[in-house]
Image (tube, rainbow, N blue to C red; front, side, top):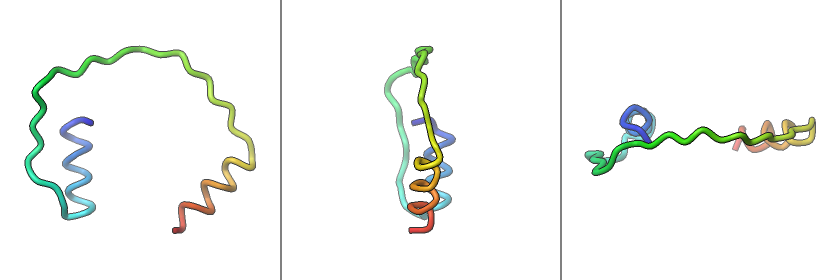
Length: 50
């Protein structure tokens, strides 16, 4: 979680206090391949409206 994403969460929900991180962010490059099909998009669209 970054400060920007936390501030966005607070803006959208009106919830959340101060955000303090006591460590540095370590970004690790990964190589992940995700296969999505039409059924995956149908499920996403079905859940999106809830």
